[in-house]
Image (cartoon, rainbow, N blue to C red; front, side):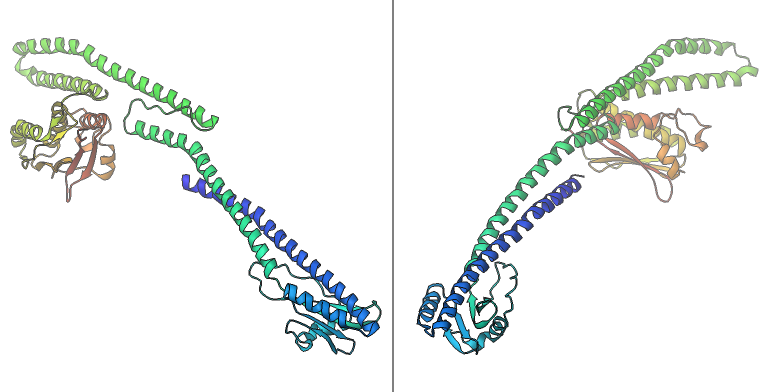
Length: 448
């Protein structure tokens, strides 16, 4: 957007400066050309008067002397002929035959006509002529070849001055465009950064409210109010989940005691119902634990010791090996080089528990590998996996695939893992394993 705005502003500046400079260039050249023409016309009128006097008296000495003096002074050739085209004056090496065309026009009493305005690169001599006589009777002609060198030099100097002024104006316009673009776009960039921060999981994101036009300042203030409202609502939701989980623990503990106390009184006919009840109590307790874990994961990360990835992998793989063997799963973990990440060892272990628990529950008989490449922790299995549409929903809270709804689970595990990583600046990515299976990549935050 900055480039487009600068392009528009600079284009407008160039057009405005060109619209001012171009007419000024033309006016300067036309004015200097007109000055040259007027000066040479005055010279022609003077020599036409001298020639008319010379033709009337028969004495051309004064005419010749003045013509030579003019050519010596200005370096411009002069030719004077009588009505019979006989040369009377020829100076500067130019003969009457060299300017026969202008002589014929002058003897026919034709006007010299307008002169196209000169440019700095004009080099052709300016040929002007004037008939000699009283207006009704032409007695001769005067032809002058005027040099345009001085005029073109003056025009070039004026054009250079105008061009330097135009260039200075463009530089100033460019600087003003940069300042204007920064003034307008800086608040937009801050707003964009704030939106990205909230999208990335930041609970509060504030932007400056003292920059840019009044409309953008008001928008920035509104964004800050929205950010505070979102953070407050999110905190209320987290407290609600945490408080509800804590409050339900006491009734659940009491229910557990009563159910356990009933075990000795269950008849064979009620054994199946009792076991089903115990299973549901276990499921409710697990759900409360997951809700409390999710509420804690939503909190801003507390400062603590960096976690050891290699130690966490070795510990959790060893802890889950027995359950994996019971499910017929081959659980492997190549030895990982020691590495420290911003996620604590406890949080990293919790994330690994979620992924290994899902693999044991939903990929029986498959193989599971846990690997670490120095930046990304990967848990890949060769189970049935998920479709692309299901993968896009897998990290949502309480979501479960249709073919997993009959199995135990709350649908909170991946949501907790993803939230824990996001709270510390990491990221979880889910993809399909070829030819079948599921791979979870954990981009762990680096220690700063």
